[in-house]
Length: 488
Image (cartoon, rainbow, N blue to C red; front, side, top):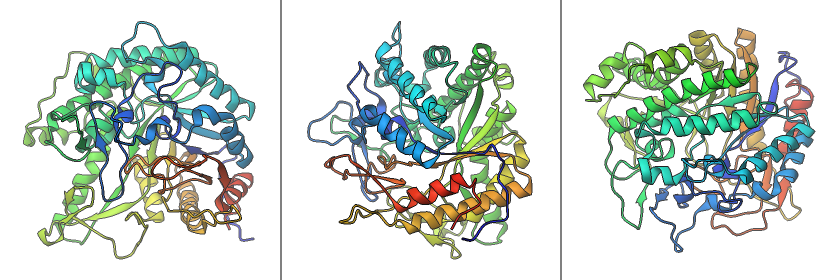
């Protein structure tokens, strides 16, 4: 076997990551209320998912059953333990705790479910890493408040936080306030991240990328989430001083396509969309360049008296991010392309990189670059909490799946993680995305699989839900067992 000579920290947290809305199922069980994700239909890589105002019998909503962790959590956690997981990132579904979002008392059935999950993880010495809000929001609050654009949602969120911080103060140490908060920079983030409609929709629904945009609403929702996050950090430390609370950023490197200064400036502009969000959550203030951005885009935020004080006082303890790919940006009008999902941008494929079957460019060295950029800027502990490759895995007649392409993708990224650690980056954990196959957030498909464990379910909801170990299952088990020394 070939060994990498770089050493990982002895207490490094190896694991995997999921989200309740893509994994859990049981959407109408245990007195759970509807969440925004429960209103999103299936789609494909070329057909965008739709949001409907009401549930319709003629549409398929993949989150309703997902892959049924709700009933299979003991089996699934045992499989994660068999791989040797040290940490498991998961999310709590807000509408399972407060079905309407603003209920006077929490739902005991929901609280008990997560208590059982945490106890099962504890049985195998697996540390939970809990995302408080991960692309879901109580749908009744969408109807009542139109999501996070309404400031009153801050207090509903804090009540939810107080409930789970108190209930799980002895079983959960690591928390993340919001998943990929910077996706509110883009129109699709309005519903995914902000739980809000930017435009009226018909009963037939609207494609997640269609309709008018309203940047002011998106950034107001983001500001309200920043304030909620800062208050949640302070609340967490009051309830248990040992709690560690982090931010979570979607990190995509935007390389300049050429050395044209215009491309360099465009690349910097894309980078600023990422950095300003983490600046607010890590440094506690909006960076200087956002004043010009808001002015030039006619965005007038409603910032209340104590907001900036709260942002400064409620900074996070660690930084987490997702990393899947990089892209190139070009200022040349000839390079403007229309992506299948309906977004138009000055993007170009990087000729030095390979591309996955879903059109994502594979850039392992970009991960090392990102880790160094992040650590240089913030100098706090970092976790990579999403990373992986979606592929159409094939279950063979002998019930095996040879996903060597996944092993190669992850191997190259782990090698670059180790290089970043040698560079001096304080990287404390790695949770690859979807260790058990789950519903794709972007397309609603099952065929876009990330896991070490195959789930027998197709894009239309058919299948036994039986779990099968892929080749990568045994590979990742060896990686964890040797603390990243054996990668081949």
